[in-house]
Image 1 (cartoon, rainbow, N blue to C red):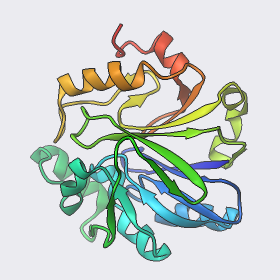
Image 2 (tube, helix red, strand yellow; image 1 turned 180 degrees about the horizontal axis):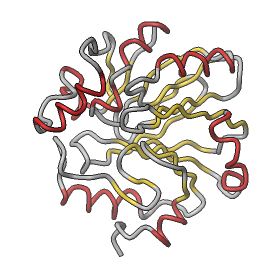
Image 3 (spheres, helix red, strand yellow; image 1 turned 45 degrees about the vertical axis):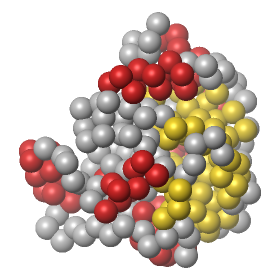
Image 4 (cartoon, helix red, strand yellow; image 1 turned 90 degrees about the horizontal axis):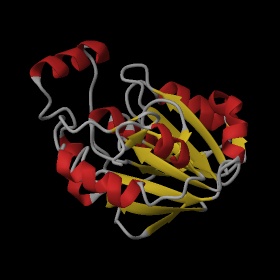
Length: 239
């Protein structure tokens, strides 16, 4: 498996690209703000063509560029049904100060469009796309429709931004795309639109904690980790 990441320059959201190998189809996960040019360069460098865009949830910093990526590739977007409504207005519901900061960062000409072809990311099913099998688990708390994705196996080829992580990757046997549910040293906030502290507690106890320690975590923000490392050190995980 090949993996590379393009962090956006506004909120540091990780846009992940996963493929069985270079020179074929891939999956783009959470293309947010200001990633299009660098994403296209990564796709060209590895000779990859997106077969789907997968959205872990519907907040603007995870979906902003999805329509253009889908349009460029002629590919569908997938999101959990409970967050489908957010794609119509991903900035909706944000506080006026936060919305103003984002609008200032994005510039007066920033324009959002939702993807034309949006399909359901269904919990309990495996999304078979681009030669990958993405096992979907509903993980509400950060939003109603937050989802995490589990892949058998770990990246054997790392794009340039991840090149220093080989020792960590080598100790793992499966991969978690955790969106904004689990981070290195933290968990998803629940004070944004769709947030629910009780649902997040249930997700952390019922979805995250049962996972094996040797699972690589590719989060929606920040550095990669493992489930075992977070179980031992993350102060926000339930005990």
